[in-house]
Length: 250
Image 1 (tube, rainbow, N blue to C red):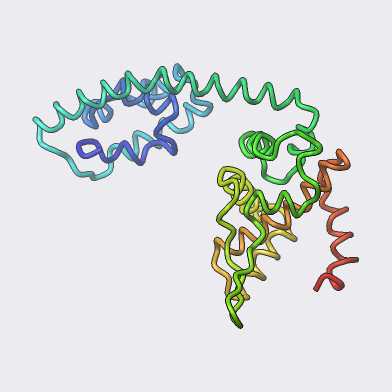
Image 2: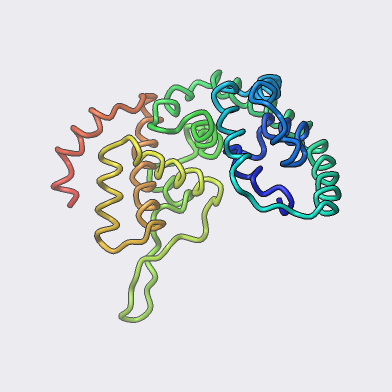
């Protein structure tokens, strides 16, 4: 916001309902600075903020720090435009929230939801995305390699004369590849073997993107095995299998 830059530092997400409600109530920094902690907390509580009383003092503290200000005409015109945009965004945010709720309900009733929910750091968003992109047809993929090819996680070997080099697979499902790579990166935050694998690829000189895609390729094999056996992911089981087979795979 050119006239209200401090607003960008008050909330972690601009599109959440509490942020929009705050901006609607305090369309300028001057109005926000004139509010009390109790008034700000009340606005956030009404908007459904989970920790309104905790964040209200921090918001007021940030508001009173030195900041850039625009002239009166810019503030008046830009604030009016912002209120119009917020008025349009609020119904959209509510509909997206309802949409997310329906997706979650449908996901939880699916037979494979327990498999995808067991994946480390898949959470409420990545788990349904992975299930939707991979699909629930048990006969869709002949083997893990076919799923890897569709996902674009396995490389393609380019050959010309005496020259040969693996490169990224372009003919693939981009949404599936994106979901798998996001999940692969998230898994490095809690799964020790995934973090070690990623770091090993980086030490080999691979870029972040290539290392994550290689990790996603490993996860595809695991996902295929889990879905085929209708089993939940168990870190101990995988790590034991890795210890037995990793030397031969190397």
